[in-house]
Image (cartoon, rainbow, N blue to C red):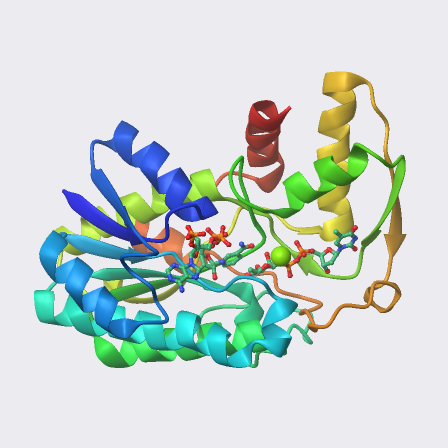
Length: 291
Ligand SMILES: NC(=O)C1=CN([C@@H]2O[C@H](COP(=O)(O)OP(=O)(O)OC[C@H]3O[C@@H](n4cnc5c(N)ncnc54)[C@H](OP(=O)(O)O)[C@@H]3O)[C@@H](O)[C@H]2O)C=CC1
Ligand SMILES: Cc1cn([C@H]2C[C@H](O)[C@@H](COP(=O)(O)OP(=O)(O)O[C@H]3O[C@@H](C)C(=O)[C@@H](O)[C@H]3O)O2)c(=O)[nH]c1=O
Ligand SMILES: [Mg+2]
């Protein structure tokens, strides 16, 4: 089976290339310069030539703060590009697995979000990703939109690598402790995405299509995540970093972030039988590779 994935150096695409080899599926990364999501005509050209059995839409404009001042580019890459991708997939008669985000939710409630809960993004990035979800769903019924969150991995840019980099020059860091969500390893995402793409390519059941939440098990704040990262660092090197627990107000950023973006993964478990490992367990796996 051949799966085309958008992006070349991103976390999820890199994890898919690694896991695809183990799962015996051919992963073909398609990205800039040949395929630029901001240039829809390039999408049709590349995909029509490649003739994959499924498309994974993993590339995105992910710079959350920068998006506040680059709204047009964020919407081009996160909404218009995926729309063109889904239109081509529909013509080719193949499924699209599209990655989305917890940031489509406002995060102002106490509960755990399910797929049918009202969205209401509070950032340009979140708004552009929601527009992407809507564009995919309008372009083809043959899709699985997977909302994940707080993605980290040995690859690319992410919170784990940022914390380890800051720890090289500092003994103490302040990290927000009032945003709640779940860190999710790109390696775990890749395993799930491959299983989902295989299933979609071989089973026309409408129940397998639609929106699904896909995050690690358990929950955390960013400060909890930092604590876990530095516990791993201490075990490996003896180096101790202290984490000061601060409020969002004490860490001003251009983009607003949801205070609560905990997602229920029950629909995915009940539909596909997929449950991702506990976030602490997967954090250890990634730290073992980075340290
Ligand atoms: N990172 C996170 O914390 C989260 C991510 N997500 C979603 O998961 C998906 C994967 O994220 P992740 O792997 O972390 O992303 P990364 O930020 O690691 O990588 C982004 C990817 O998008 C590609 N890209 C950006 N702009 C374009 C463009 N104009 N044309 C083609 N490709 C482009 C990049 O290209 P290049 O290879 O050339 O650099 C890169 O491969 C995204 O849809 C994201 O919105 C959801 C929740 C959390
Ligand atoms: C570096 C740093 C960040 N923070 C805070 C800022 C923010 O609230 C939180 C996480 O920082 P980040 O910059 O990693 O956050 P951010 O880039 O917003 O992460 C998001 O990326 C997009 C793509 C998603 O889809 C989301 O699921 C989420 O992973 O930690 C601190 O409190 N102290 C620090 O030293
Ligand atoms: Mg970021």
